[in-house]
Length: 129
View 1 (cartoon, rainbow, N blue to C red):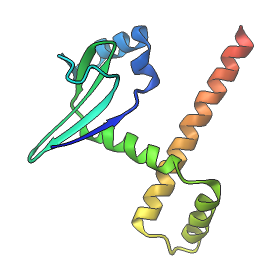
View 2 (view 1 turned 135 degrees about the vertical axis):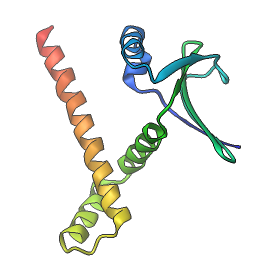
View 3 (view 1 turned 90 degrees about the vertical axis):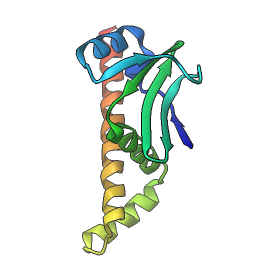
């Protein structure tokens, strides 16, 4: 059995936001917490795969395996420094990039975009206060 654990997303940490999302989306259903440690878990055992998140002593199953894999790919892409990404960009512009390199650049773009949205939102909220 393989177990992977990622940190929680911001909507999972905030109880009010979490309750609203869980109420709107029926693909999450509540279960008993297994580890009693906050995080998103992915367990693979032979043919079975299970994804769930635990927070504040509660747990919910996530029915979509792609959710975990996308999050993991985005976190992996965020670890590359600017110099490495610039080198991959040059390789892509010369049409020499492999599918894996193209996928890495895509997930890096997703990471940068979501980071910029978060930053601009925080700046906007600071101006309002």
